[in-house]
Length: 119
Image (cartoon, rainbow, N blue to C red):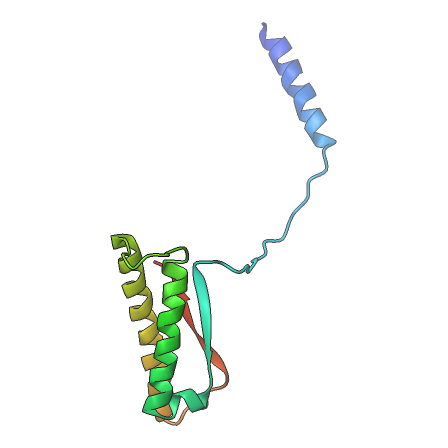
């Protein structure tokens, strides 16, 4: 193939692309339910007493069970499931501790939730 025929093929290819419409698409974030994430709602009344905090922690533990071992029908969990559960609970309890500290310092807290995420 000669240089002029290569240039001609290139020019024809470029012209064919010129007729192709180009769309600029916006980026968007899609939020979908995931079996590996669960949100546990709470209200300020949950944070006002030790019993309310314990109840929230109990609900977080149940949520961690669901996201880390959703199909576990046995009492023996794998290492990964146990590690996932411990990490999920630890992270969620940090969120609870932060919410309790904000509530007890006098900050207004509306309805909120703790995110329990499989790790």
